[in-house]
Image 1 (cartoon, rainbow, N blue to C red):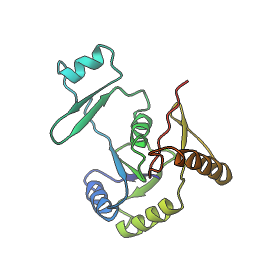
Image 2: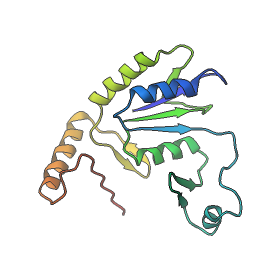
Image 3: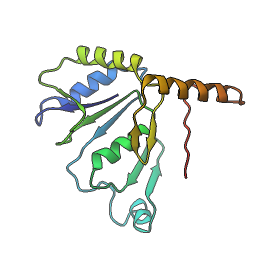
Length: 174
C-alpha cells in the first residue's frame, strides 16, 4: 500500500506520520521523505567518490545506521518508491513531495490518525500477496493470476530446505 501525506509547511505532517507509525507497530513501514537539499552526501567523501568513479550506489554502515546513496533519475519519487519496495513493506508513506500524482493523498489538516490507521490495516489484510516488477514497473495481476503465482511458488519452495519462510524474494535477471 502506498499513501502520500500532504499539508502546508508546519501543518503537522511529521507528527501525523509519527502517530501513525506508533499505531502501525508490527507492520513493515517505509517512509520516503523529500528534502529541499540538493544532496546529502558530501563531495570528496568516500561514498561520493565511489559513485563518481562509477558505482551505481554506495552504502555506509555505522554502529547504528546504514545509509544508501544513489543517483536518482528525473523522477526521483518513483526511484525512491522502487528502493522502498525492496524492503517488502506493508505500507510506504510518502511525505514532502510537491507532485504525488496517482497516490492516495491524505491531507493532515482534514484527516484523523485513527481513521487512516483503520483504512491502512483493512487494505493490508485484503492486500496483495505477490507483486511483480519488471524494470521497476509493476505488472498488474488479477486475483486469479495472483493466486496461481502465489500457490505455485509457495508449493515449489516448500519442497526445498529453508523454503518455508514468511517472505520470499525472487530476483530474475535476463
